[in-house]
Length: 97
Image (tube, rainbow, N blue to C red):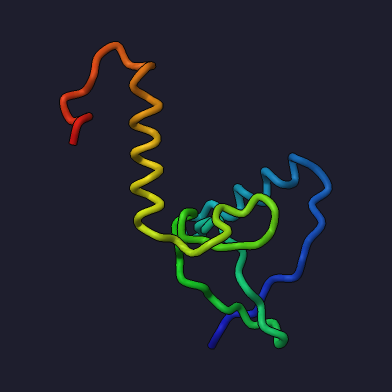
């Protein structure tokens, strides 16, 4: 049986939020960092867990606007290594690849 989506709750204060978080900290609750899709019937539709780099969204502030490509990750790492060198006291032996 698929669980039903919880009803939205108004949280009136930071203290109430902290109490809610403490109640959810039973060791069985995990924050995924992504919202869950809910069907029209109110059933939770679980999406596969993806790292932030793999999440695509068109909304402002989304991690990616296009699907993940390994070449993008390689380019980002190369940019980081190039930009980091001036801030290092020495050049790492693995910097030349």
